Length: 170
Image (cartoon, rainbow, N blue to C red; front, top):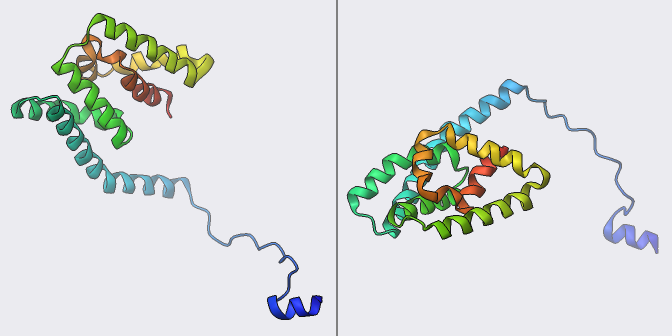
């Protein structure tokens, strides 16, 4: 029976382990150079994506064309520094543009603050306080961002999620 199986399917014995890869190892300089090349290639695309996100968010908030363009200029640098992907960029732009159009009430800010703290505790556990402090420092060290988050928008859970992720290095 084994002879028939071997004739039909070939040797069914497990192959000897494959030899170690002969691919050359890369130096740290080569890895860094590759990362810089990727940033050069994709940085412009990310910027265009962020500008589109800002325009869309501003238009969603029924801002005038002049207000939309002012928002693009003000926000493009902020998103480039703090949003790690298009989804985060859109969430951040939506929250900030929404705060421009309709200042959140004190009750809304308190509800957001509570939800943000709950999020931090669920995501970062015992490190939640440290991540919150790092997030607050990140905002303090970026005056353009701090100005955009004034009025309570910084308590929005979407904003907290994005900035906490950045501050925590995730």
